[in-house]
Image 1 (cartoon, helix red, strand yellow):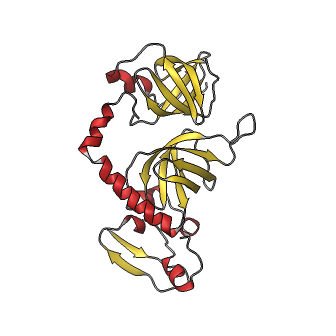
Image 2 (cartoon, rainbow, N blue to C red):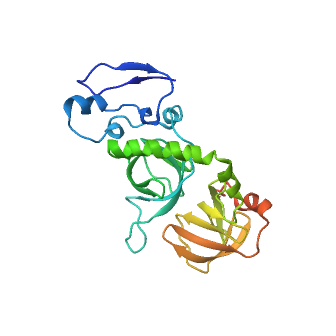
Image 3 (tube, helix red, strand yellow):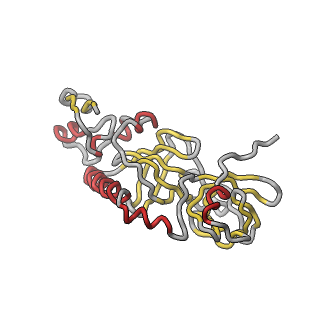
Length: 259
């Protein structure tokens, strides 16, 4: 893999390098020279100088890791005027940015506050959008970025551990496909995000916020909303499903278009 170390304007010339890049090298412009010779700030300002496209990020060193979390867009409020929180899940992560699957896709340039149990809270900016997610730039100090690099290396090793793979037989699991369709009794449909699923029910995060007791279908599985929580709601299936058929029945990628 070949890249170029890009100092900020007014610092030393760029130095080419070759070989495998560490996670901390996965950035378009890193102001290390700026910090070293100017001593201005501890924060690496790559997110301001070099927002990145999804295609560029996919060519960089990063970890394909699934970590559940939550996020809020700074313009989304509920009927009581409170900031809405939605569930999300990482797909690809580096110490500088990450791609996340989400139920509500924001706009490029929009501010995001996110939280992940393994990583903590981030203040972010959306730099690119996808059909069911977005790429967000992470704002943090150099020290935390170094910690993030070590954490990702550990998670990458952990998910390759055979003992971890065996735990996927647990009752509640996260399907590989993150999105499905919620259908109400009147026939209207809403795209939604699967937090996790079991043979008895499913946890959902969605722009639509149904009250407890609402009958609906998640994919082809009919059920009823039995509980609300901060990032979504729980649906209990009318009939317990067979595990082998569960993903096929729950996951529906398309959503009917209005006539």
